[in-house]
Image (cartoon, rainbow, N blue to C red; front, side, top):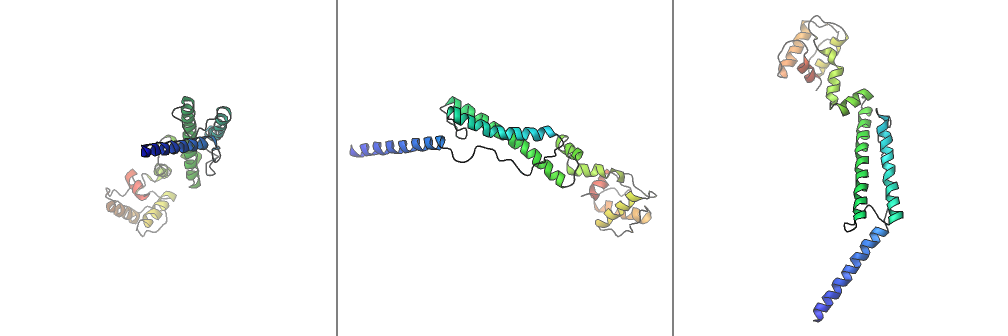
Length: 209
């Protein structure tokens, strides 16, 4: 009987401690409510409204959390599933954070592309049309397509430089002669391409790898 009584008292004490801890954690929140703004976002993003929405959403997180705490005593960081208002408030708080992080990821990704030299239009194409940086590069080098014997100039000079980077030893003079054609054919053969001696899309893709 004494053991049962002792056990019951022990359970009661533990339960009391747990309840007090949870109350203390809820009503004495640690840290700041404010969302930490990223310093690595693209503030010059191609769509200024996204930047504006990011700052607005980030500020709303702290304002909403403080409002719930000051007016209703609800700490939105700790959901009380037995309290409907707490549950609703916490779910909305988490939604605000998720929305802000989504915008933040978009702006940080844009900043990385901008640092690599991509223009706003190129970044927009990558992020909205599903293009890859490699697609952008292929588009920029599209003037290579169709290069063949007898076509001379700056494009041929760049082609010769690319072929040399891939192991050829061509004179970089901008003249697409038989030697350049043979070098291109050798490159095509090594890369499993038809050795046409002219630059097609697959050849250009292989050159830009």
